[in-house]
Length: 404
Image (spheres, rainbow, N blue to C red):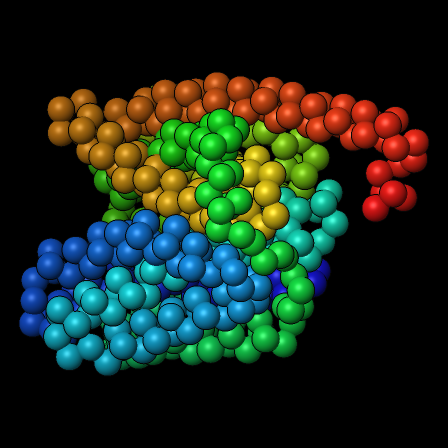
């Protein structure tokens, strides 16, 4: 594994921790700033808005620079944002600092994915992306629980300050290990032109629909476990830790399977997700079955992320591809919002806590259909490119590589 991938994974760990750790520190932050818990909860929404705004904006601004320069600059924003959050004297300044921090989130993953796949041979591209994303999933296993514990025992400010140090470590790793020539400087015009390709929008739609299935269920996992499964509240955290382990295993396995099967794996994976959710709906009242199916659900759902991320970059077919890569990160956040909203709608309608599972199953089936279409479109495009290459070689009279 190139050491630069470790630097990217450390950055992803920091980003994942700072995004989700606030959920575990709501009471401490509220008490420290003299505001309500619900007001602090709005910081979660503020962060999501920052991600959606920052992903395309900062990526577009960084197109003319090398991936290393862009990633280091994004980590500087991330580090400053967390440092300001740790020192924030008021709720308003904390909210502003959180938005600043979030601006770097989507762009870092978008540009980082492009850099990661350029560090390895093309047949290992998805695996490289999965190693970076594994840092994000590990944040839910280690970073968030540890940060919550530290906040409860000492101070939430210490947690955010510690995350700022993770940002500094990432900057040092990127400067030391990421080659200056990793990836390509892009051209904003060609990056924007990639959005004219139907294949790009197809993959973005796949992300928004297919991954909404995950968030339709995961957003309500606590009441599902306690109200349906009868699991004591004290056991929810250990179960979520198991879920986090499953997502990490799934991410790494998905990298390998994605390199081999591409969108075929995504289609099969989403069909499997739908089947798991249907089974979950019928067995959720059995505690052991609920835990096992939840962990399997997380493992399978997260295994698809690296494949789709690599797929959207390949669909762009432009030098770089960082802008569509960042757009896919924004699409993940749209999936989060849509899935959670649909889950809330069926629960509010009085359909119970199994209803989000049926919603998730329907979304997964729709995503599987989009994956099949994307697979066929990708094969047609590959065949067309190969035909163009053969035609060019016949006209020139020698292989393309030798002529170049």
